[in-house]
Image (cartoon, rainbow, N blue to C red; front, side):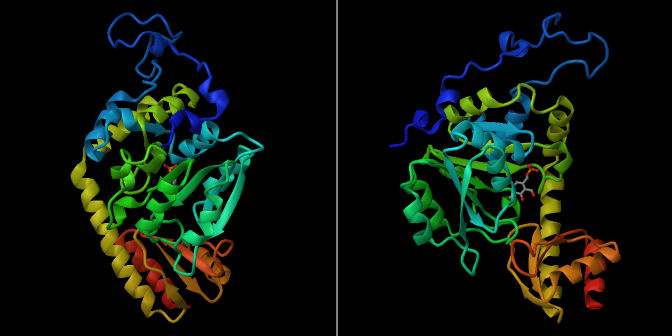
Length: 341
Ligand SMILES: Cc1ncc(COP(=O)(O)O)c(C=O)c1O
């Protein structure tokens, strides 16, 4: 049985966090002379440090209780906090499956946490036999699983994911940034079963709010407590909390956009299959498609010359390009340019 306290870094367990004025007095009415704010204007007050209204809205949409939600300044802040809550710099390790989202490793380096990198197999799946020997390593504190995975676009097989969560003494983060474009269910439904599971989602992709910088993490409520201790007190601005609430309320816009992006993904994928310059089109459950070509750098630079910007992923998978699904017009422009190769 996993004991939450055993997962947490010792100094975090004992940490007395900074308490802000809104921790001392939680009411919303009155004459506020406690936070050294300027009394004039409409952006003069500090934000709600625990984003209560926004969390209530997210709770309704996602079916996750408010006390199981932590919000970060983008998922990238949650990734960084993950290292700081669970890992001792200089001694602890985290595990990723490559190729995957680069921030897991970038944040590990910033926090002086060693990365164990296990390559995905030729179908971009996790081979459980490769992970099993690592699971008993006491200095391994975090495992990052990205599903659908960036940049490959596929979901990771569920039985392998569950085997890893249930066989590991540390914390498993499942990054579901692209889950809205996938067919299968979210792992957030397994939170009650696994106290060491943290599921991340974001408003940056399907909800079209990358500029708002809000990442969601669903986890055991005791873990939320430690994330709250570690975060900067006002990590999400009032403007961004309000913008997110306005947009989350427009459920129909979200549904229409996700539907259109998925339809365009199918169309673009079939167009890419027809092109001689494309050697392989990988199946995608995300809002992007990975393709293999003969010379990705040449193709990337030629497209830049035509003001079409895609991502050259040659450094992580040889001669692969990642194409984000755009509007129909944008995708047509890309297809036309690719036909000229
Ligand atoms: C897998 C994955 N997770 C997280 C993020 C970043 O999310 P956020 O914008 O919430 O920081 C990205 C961004 O591309 C991503 O690909």
